[in-house]
Image: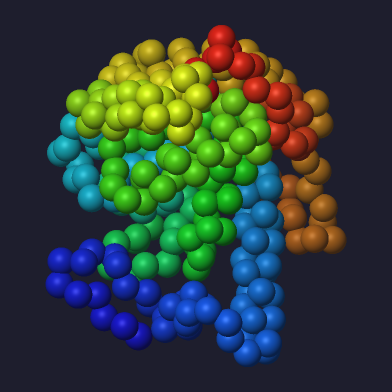
Length: 284
């Protein structure tokens, strides 16, 4: 096991095999074993999250404490999202993730955590109703995106930036539909938003309407209205067909999040990709 250098919070890998996986070509046996392991991790995630219902994923730093203003903001957002009928999904760790899950619990809503195995940083918080742990970051990111109808991005570091731009690339390239992406915190995200709007558009590396994929705000009310108008208005909120529990797959009844059929978007079991609405469309 490698050791994290002082001050390098959560930067080491708990198992040297994880690092070896990224060191280039290995033996065929190693590559096959690793592919099977990754496949099994995907299947485990699909099984665990199949019945959690329509989610909104909240991204943000694990380092904010309970007394921080961003923790309070994320907790408020978690409660409001639950009241809207969504399952609150996070990375399952401390900080912003804990706050959002805690807010869902405050509102008597349902929340899930998709944790990543790290030696120092990612400990599961006590407010999740369902918890799944992953070894690989890319598998975890698939789960955080696959089950979500909107993304709320609170202040965070490299990991949050990675998750933000992953979601934006998927929307920009039509891999997923135009789901709302909300940046919470104008003071924190304002310079980045300005850089995207001015530098990237000026140099032609993105289209002008790509800026509209993001909603920047400080207001929980404005964020919730934006999510409701886009996610609910565009995709509906009535089940067309609920997933059925299969006893022979070890899926006992009662594993869903408890939402009534009226609390879940239509076509939830269908593909997420869809046509973009164009420059004049929703800011998601």
